[in-house]
Length: 459
Image 1 (tube, rainbow, N blue to C red):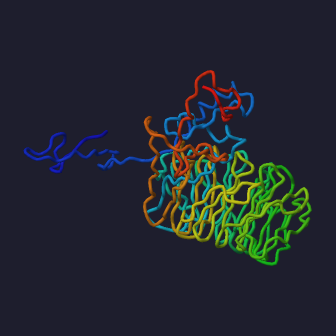
Image 2 (cartoon, rainbow, N blue to C red):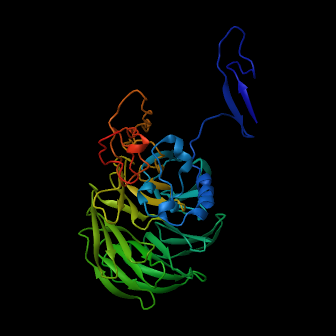
Image 3 (cartoon, one colour):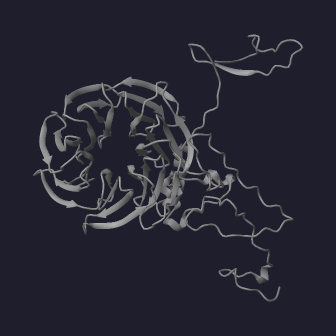
């Protein structure tokens, strides 16, 4: 129910003799609220369009080239359509900031398996659910008595397991009902991960231990000891019986969960390893730490595949893209957000002032078009792909409003403008100082089919 009210409280008509603008009000069943516009990122149209067009697409050559103009936003497809061009999925555009009324650091963010909601865990022990399309608040519940430190969904999407700062582990259903809880560690739980079969899961803690648990009974099966200090991160291989862990002792260890033995140790970092994750291809392992380095290891050779340098302070989080195996995002303690491509040394995209403090957690939407970051500055921010025709130089300042990017106007017909070729790796982004110009007109007799740049002597 919606109604218009003037300043006198009368509905429908302004005061006689006055020129008072109407303000739209919305009644939600409790009290009148002022109607506001909400930004939304709806991916349903692009998915439906891709399902229609993929029937006629034989390979990547049949995919339409995404032209840098706002009129062609209808041609924007989901990231899975651009498997051969991951740069289209670099989410550097700011969308929305979500903040609770009672402000606490956001330690972990996690999308629900279907991507309809986002769950954040804070230092107060609360779960906050945000809408995945309009990014507005939905509900909040007191999940733990201490800070939520770890959160992960099972592969069958039916269960979520969380761990807190006091070492307590809890089981949650998809409707956010808690079914089981038990004391798992004596110190804070820093990370947890599910086995490919979902019958077991592993946790790591500041007590320098990694424990493997039976999910059905909640009992401890194995205890992996070998790190000399706090274990900050752990991840189970996507389809093998293999665990990777990173610790405050600067070491990365690979474990056999069946025998609880250490297989090998990687001495790649000079400071604490704060984040690691297996790639979906099962061959690459990304690690990041306080030495400001991001490293990708190939376990087939047990060597460093690539080293990324660009962060100015320690790196707190790292996350592979769900659709593009070469693309990953990292968050730093200075609030920076950077995107990397395996095979390229320079960042594929960056936001130096994405947050005002540590970026503790990152998570991609299951479709891959939105990245969410949770920070020590008490905020949760949503980042998406730039639309066709938007400038690629838009910077987000966390202390100010986001500067809206202006789309260059179309060139006039009576003006000759210099044509500059677009960067080959990012076809859907308009460079900041380059303007498009149609190619010069040539009569039909002077046109060449395959070599339009060849000089033509006679017209």
